[in-house]
Image (cartoon, rainbow, N blue to C red):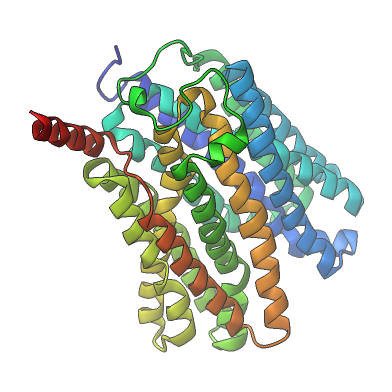
Length: 418
């Protein structure tokens, strides 16, 4: 029986897991933010700078699937979560100690390998402990709210200030401390979810009812495959925005760096707001309509960047469009968790994350950059528009999984039979 109220275990769990993933996302973005300081000391080329991000993305995807699969196989979550926190904190220290590019790259890739499965394992714990009527809201708070505030809004000014007043190595050292603190709290307070219990709505899971289920079999489950495809195109949309908007706004639209910075900061707040707003709405009206509506909103950002002349109008369109990121907790965690038995939850979520990171965040993003080198930077934004449209079309094919809608449909079916 879950304790209700402000001080319930469920609320404490959301706070701990949300802060922990926010710290992980903060660490992930640290190298990109500190590049202007690092490249002078280590004499980095543009290719090396680019591979710091793409190399981490690849290991993030591999770790999400492989370690998520391992966690499902042994049936435990807490030891994995503690290990992730310790390793990515140590990797931050090693990043600060790096006196060569290979050492820095290795530390970032190891960090990606343990941070990739962090979210699937967090969401697997969440699925086991959440009340069904607020599962979407809880996932949004964990995945988007804290990650947006810490990793997108707080990280740039804080890390830049630390690197300016001290040096970039000190900035890396300090990023290790929150992760270690979260590990201590989790060790003392976090409990291992009971793997022998099953929630009422899990009995209606579409897949994963047998003793064993391979990753390939999971892709045979309609919603899992669709979430992988949605992830591919929506993660590509997200990464292209963060990769190219700042340059496009300054070089192509001729906005000042200050105006560009203000516009980009708004994306972090949009992600934080939509991160719990979209899942909250989905708990009440269903996952599918929210997925369709919020993904479609993603068109506003590239269209605004391409065509809006007034900075205020542009800022509003960028903010509106970036609320599409509110769909991420749904297709990466909530829908896979409600589709398949929770004994396979981390593997299924790892598959979705892996597809998005490797195919969307790395291959499509790189291909869009390649095309723009042979045409104009506008091409990236057109590819981004195409990704939103394709991702939304896949949303139309999803099967509804929200408990409130599933129970209503079952009641209607029962009434029709009687």
